[in-house]
Image 1 (cartoon, rainbow, N blue to C red):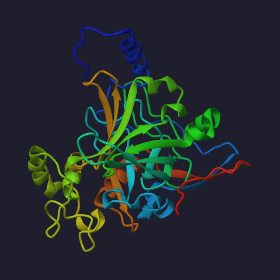
Image 2: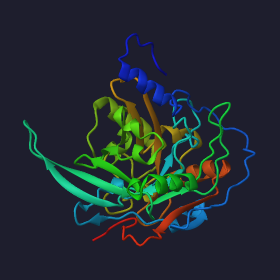
Image 3: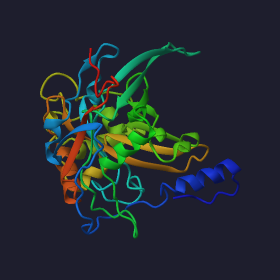
Length: 348
């Protein structure tokens, strides 16, 4: 994955050494046999109250996507879904996709949750643009975590051996404010820079050399009516029958409006197994500062719409994780503390 690089500054050398600790340079390629690890039961510190449920019941138990809030107004249709985070790449077990350290034990999230602040950015040669800061609390009902260890081998020697237990242990150790992820969204809410992540990990220095981002994939930009390049549009037209099979909802800008094509759940037919990996909704990337060719990334899929209806991608995502032993998930209900700290979404 890394081309020959002749010159490095001391900072780059140190950066690569740290990144190696995340196992970013070996990527998962195939399913494995079932792990022999015994299934762990949740054993959270008493400060956490939680709700435990079957993975396939995620849409019935997590918050539904919010349609609006006071700061943003109406959220754009493409954001009004419950999203599954395929950090290990098992929904599409192919080389070079997925967090090679196994990722975090995070199952799904509602990306309209949290608190939002709008700010207007001045630009020299064009009109001012609104941008949005979202503070997303992962210790709440808009974010679900593994209750089981994954039976998935991402390298010859190491298994994914993480649950939400380990995540909340780190939160308890590093401070409750590290529950938050900060998303710095662009004006149309199609891409965001993500910060406040490394503060909740054993390697907080990672923020000094690595940037995290999430962006809407070109096909779905086209499908929801955003402009893309001519090359991307040509590819999107070819992908339309694979990513959203439909007789009546084909073509550009056909999703998001009231009617039979309002949501992916309503508009799109069954997705074939071989086509899922071509149709990620969001792409989540990690990049090392100053080294353009290195990027570790994974795919994010829409699991359910704002009405609680599963999308065609729900089946593929759930089956992949249940088959790899993530049969139970949970989310935090509240933190049992005298400190009055809000949990989950703060709707007006």
